[in-house]
Amino acid sequence: MEAKEENVGLSNANFEEQYVADVYKSISHHFNSTRRQHKWLLVRNFLDSLDFGSTVIDVGCGNGKYLDFPNLHMFGFDLTEDLLFHAQKLGASAHKANCLSVPVRQNHFCAAICIAVIHHLSSVENRIQALTQIARALAPGGRACLCCWAFENNPKRIKGEKNGNWRPIPPSEGGCPGDYYVDWHLDERYTKHRVKEAQELPHKGRERVRFTRYYHLFIENELKELCSHVEDIDQDSVEEVFDQDNWYLYFSKQK
Amino acid sequence: MKLRGHNIFTCNSEGCRAEANEQPLRIEAEDTIVNETTLNLEMLSTLVDSCSYEHLLSGASDLEVELPEELPNDWAEDEDLLNLLHNALNDIDVKTGALICPSCEQRYPIIDGIVDFCLDKE
Image (cartoon, rainbow over all chains, first blue to last red; front, top):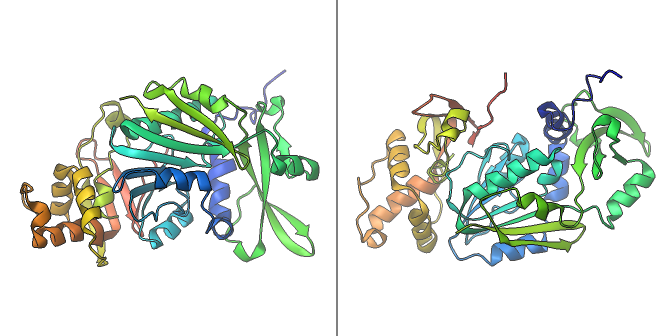
């Protein structure tokens, strides 16, 4: 059976561009309005636990939600320009880079956070690469806090699978267990420009545009296992905590 | 882009990454604004301590800001120097321009204060 051109595997660079980067470009203002205030407790606790004046890198900083801690020197990177503009308006250092290639000095930062980013990476290889980038940036002994959507008992996933907003990606399309296409319905107030994948759908009498994003949901120990491939990580320091439908990953860089 | 950000940046090209090249990127500033913010001594001290002074000197020079060749030991007590450092690191904001790698000449455009480190894959 001949492989179709579309079945190039989820680690194809164009896949992430189409199902993550381009979607966030289109939905950025709507996304920003849903994410503005709430800081996740465990991330807040992690940042609050750092010494005064610590340097912190935020990989995938989005609209700069965590870049305004007054006692820390925060440096953010993200791919979505509109979200970066929001971050810059807060006076934050926020610039455009991909988590797979973070353009910073090695062995430098006291701490790192990476919130809701790695679950958008569509291959094991890319996930390991992102972890490697974060570990590389940390000073010896520096600590990281990451979080990704969990597979277990996830009400969003369970509800989404029922109403069709969450669709498991079948093996025939290169999908692995935990891989999903997840819809975002763009409120018409935020329509900026549409990517070719968007579909017009009627929604409660109001026209909405649907965008599809890629997510990989993690099971227990899956993130921990990825860490075992990263030399810079002190394996004894690796910890996973389940909270609010997310797996939180903590690790330190080798001293 | 402010100098406190510039201080941590490195060239993102394949060649420079392979060599772990961490030379300061050259700044070509077209549009710069100065937004004066309040100096917090403790935050500034920790920031300066975390900085590479070589990078700071290089970046400041590109922006035509004169800093001493070396930081004197009592720099934290010199009010004029503190204001100069604070201004250089936190207040000057390059809105349009580019960062250029002195080794491989890779350019990273700065638009609306944001440096774009993404390299197009041809």
